[in-house]
Length: 194
Image (tube, rainbow, N blue to C red; front, side, top):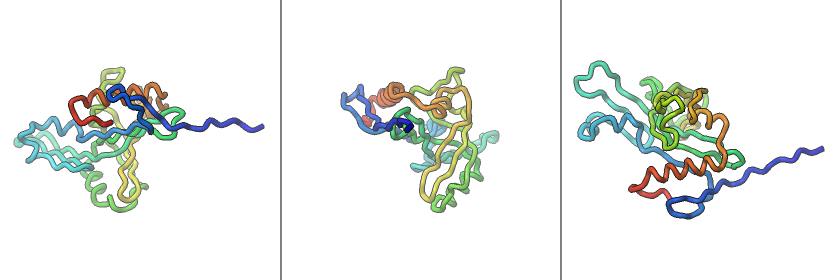
């Protein structure tokens, strides 16, 4: 006998801010890694090099105990159970100097055979603290680099943190709507994403 297959549907959710129903899986991007905001605003021009995809932060003058911080922007997918497309985050991940330099040098080439280790230096609404109270900066991940000109994909190491669990197991539609609305709420006072 033939098995009956469930067809995945296009995700849609009603925004609690604008009241509109949005079609398609949510996608949100973070402008900068958290380390960027740790640098006093008056020092950012001298200590930070940042683009939409790269961020390098020099230690403060006289700080001989710290090393520069290197981050790249990547995408992180959270499957939505029963939906065609995942919930996608544009997030930042730390890299060693060697990995950062290699990424920059080979970005326009096929990097899909490469990967690197990183930490997740971001604040994500709904996920900012895990069950253990650990922030996201303490989540380890593998960065799987992409084809020429594509952002890498982030895969969290297996842990009990809710973000790691959701990336592994997926979220139901209700939780995806809750997370999307949490992101929109955090953006109050800024340009509304709707």
